[in-house]
Length: 65
Image (cartoon, rainbow, N blue to C red; front, side, top):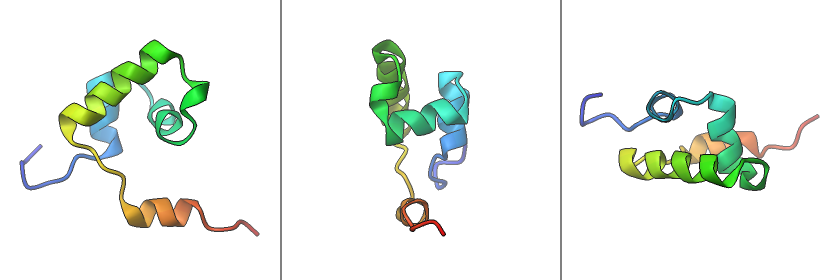
């Protein structure tokens, strides 16, 4: 990954060796993920410097019809 690009959730997925659903659960409802797995994924997130896009968070919190 070029240093000018921000890491994506898929970079976290590849580095942690888990599915994107698991990474999403860690970010959105961490109590549903085993503590060891949560710790592992959070370590990868920290190492890569992953940050959720504010736009993506906003879209995910829109009321559903």
